[in-house]
Length: 125
Image 1 (cartoon, rainbow, N blue to C red):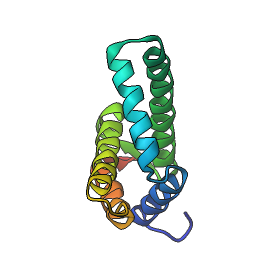
Image 2 (cartoon, one colour):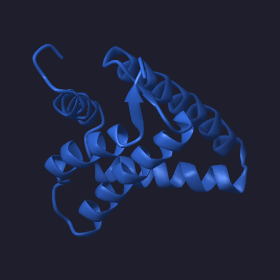
Image 3 (tube, rainbow, N blue to C red):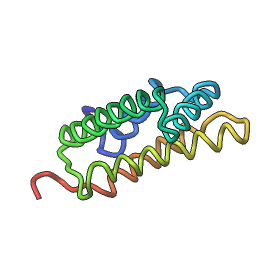
Image 4 (spheres, rainbow, N blue to C red):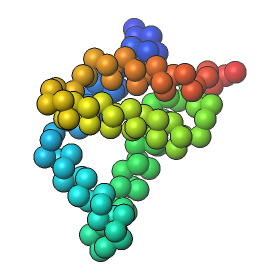
């Protein structure tokens, strides 16, 4: 992150995240099926719920660690920040799939760091 301001560094982090999780119609549909099974509380759904809980926890820890590396801490509960970011990503993906177009990575690169940084403060304050 050397030479980047906090917003630019956040954009790089989210861009790398997007490369790990490319938008994919088939995966979106499969995940939706797993989510429904989780709501129905069948055995496969319970396994998905456990895995989903682990993924969220790992992402939340990573988010806090990255912010600390940037000299920042959240001013809201980390879970609340995670919900805000994941909801934004899900909405952008859902819109792209429904409208049969590529996901707007530039939009996410701009919005997600701004959302997260609006809920942070310097550690030394």
